[in-house]
Length: 85
Image 1 (cartoon, rainbow, N blue to C red):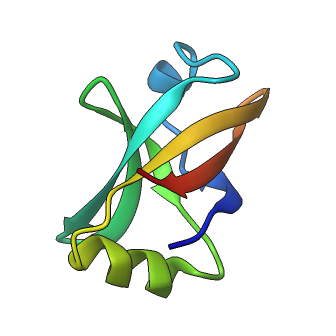
Image 2 (image 1 turned 135 degrees about the vertical axis):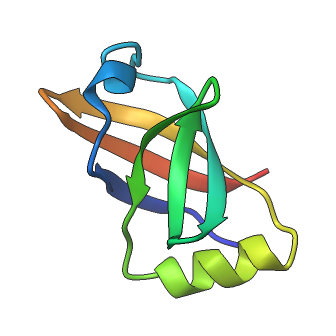
């Protein structure tokens, strides 16, 4: 288990527009296509990219749950801190 700070890739601007600093997103593993996404209220806010993505996927598959807290929003760029729950 670890924490990771990263930016959301391919942000969904309609969801990003509802986020504020401190918003907590659910981190979900999608299998087809294989990707890790941050969800807000059932909607995808964006994909998680990280040098440790393989570790995150392994932990999610093992049952560890993660959340992502929004730490910065600059235009369409959203920075999140991913942490275990």
